[in-house]
Length: 399
View 1 (tube, rainbow, N blue to C red):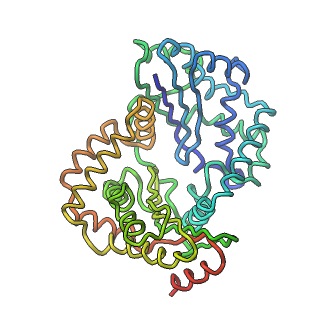
View 2: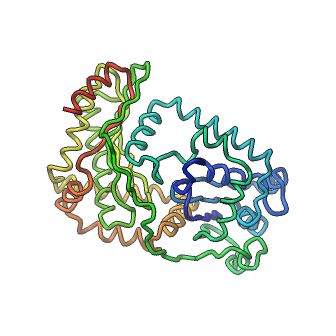
View 3: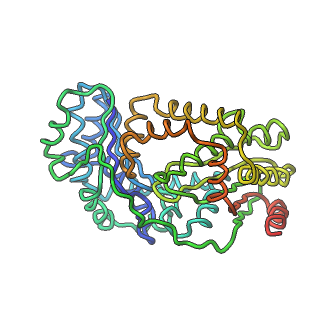
């Protein structure tokens, strides 16, 4: 059995001087809640052979429980206690602060992460999507227990969706409704929420290129735009484009950058599901001697999807890839529960995937090209490399 509880709003509503507070809250909730301290929770979960986790995303918090059917009644109350009565003991908060800071430092050792952080900051500024859910080290050091308590007290009132998948006891819904741990929580089953525009981006970019100089022979290039909400009707058109560009060995980036020119050791597209303005990024990793050619080829690939239509054969293949991508992402009960909870949590209906797959049949190459022209013009570039490579790429980009 897999149970997923999506709680609306995650790191995107972190206060400006407390970036990372939702991450601290979600990780500390696991370390004691209701009548149980951290040792007792660990014993309950581990003795059941179960897994209980809470993750922080930009758009929400996701509590995940995976267990066998026989232990459902024993473990489900923990989810309720995490929301209604987290203990948030100071020693556990300090431990999570230390672990989070170490995770952020590990991230900063990644050249790709540095390039992505630069792109994100350039595009979103201090907006909702302008920082990693882990937060910032300076902010985390300033966060106190009372700050986390303030955020924790809002969880009861936020919109939520609980999805349970797999083999579970009969009458599980009525059981949950009667639990003391859930008595203050209103969980909306399969409810579609109205769209909320409060986190639309108002940040205006002051530049179209971001660079980070390092003493390295590696070159990371990110070229992308902030696009549209996942509930926008054109979202599927951009998802097909991301399949065309970066999914599989027949993708455009693979054929051009790997097969034809052999200039990269990694290339792809980053296009996640977001409730608001979703990043659409082509990324490539290469060496300094191939950096300029890689950069120009990336630009050529970007220009191609804006200026020319996908051929009928390519469009058919892209649709097959998209169906395969959906099927691959929904193989396990845990994946299915998480996907459904996420979609419901960002305001999409129970039948969203079925509706998209039905619509897929009638989508034309012209529609995809029109969407690219509307949403993908004037991308922004992030480069992470040594000063010489950055100077050459910057000169070409700004000209």
